[in-house]
Image (cartoon, helix red, strand yellow):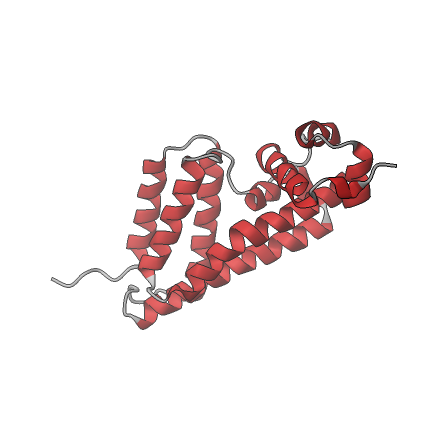
Length: 199
C-alpha cells in the first residue's frame, strides 16, 4: 500500500481543481488527474475518495479561495457603485487575460455542466449564488445611501440582475468575447441604474 503522506494533498487538489475548472467534470477522467499529479490511483482514492468526491473538494476550494474573498471585499467596500464597477472590471480582467483567460468561472461552468445533476453540487452552487447576490446587494445599499442610484432602483432585484450579468461575463468570456465588448455591456448596465449627474 502506498504511503499517502508522501505527497502534498493540497497541491494535488489544486492540480485537480485546474483540470476540472478548464475541462469540466464530465470530460476530466481520473487518468487525467493521475497524469497531471504524478500520483497513482490508490493514493488519490485513499485521500479524496472517487472522482465525485474529488470534484466536490475542488469546487469547494475554488469557491472558498477565489469567489468568497472577492464577494466579501465587495460587500464591505462601502463606496457603492464604484465598488460594483471595480468588481466587474476585476472579473473581466481575470476572465480575459492572464493564466486562466478563457476558462470562465468554475462555479458558473458547473451550472451548465453534467455535474449540476449532483445534489451536493447544486447546494454548493446555490450558496455561491446567494453570496454573490448578497455582496452586490450590500454594495447597492451603500450606493443608495450615497445617493448614487437612479430613482426607483431597488437594491434587491437589481442585485439579482447584476448577478446574472456576472454570469454572462463569465460565460461569454469562455467563448472569446472581447474584453472591450464586455466592459461596454457592464458600463451600460451600471449607467442605467446610476443617478444622472446634475448639470
